[in-house]
Length: 303
Image 1 (cartoon, helix red, strand yellow):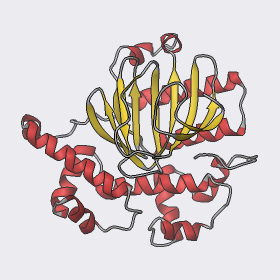
Image 2 (cartoon, rainbow, N blue to C red):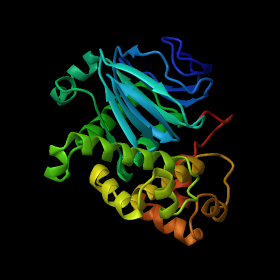
Image 3 (tube, rainbow, N blue to C red):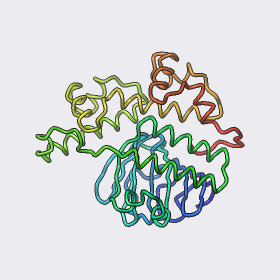
């Protein structure tokens, strides 16, 4: 893969994207991609040849992993392993971006937690605010410039953090009665995913009633099912998406005023934006702007 470029991944047929390699210490590769949609249908299935960690940054798309279709958005974390079959579709258009870490099995085998990586199937889950900030700080550090030794050390440290994070299983916290009725479980998963699609693509302007109407549900039923299926309230999930969008913007070099960001992302005012970001991430936006913006940036990147 070239250091930067536009097009499909040269190693396999994938959705066209803007690519930026962050670093490639021995046995590992870290890169970012922002998809450029030419076809909203499914890509051809590809067989994964390395362990991959895919961390959402913005937007939303659908993925089909080993035949199972799920939604990926800015909160998503996906681990694939060699032999998995993966295809993606972009029914919502352009804008989804992610960070990908590819790791050779020999590198994982040398880690003390190798069993946790090699002796488990792939999994999908979501990142909390702490994991998302660790992800973004890792990207910012790589973009500022690290040597190969430090890159490898930082990546291994992040992988430890990620494995300890341990994503929530999709069925955890469900009523036993729901678990016993497969059709109900499928319907509830579909409703929660549809709500995630609407929230991820609404520009944060819709009310709860409007989201419920979009998915064909009552607000009460949607709120109840969403919490059961995701472990998060709709408000908390919406705030997670909004804060991730703010973090993306804070990392850009143009330095837009915080009041303008508050308006753009549907916060009541700048104080509300600051409070929600601090609650989610532990730092105010001004400090995050300093942490996430590369010290030297000669040109804008892909995200």
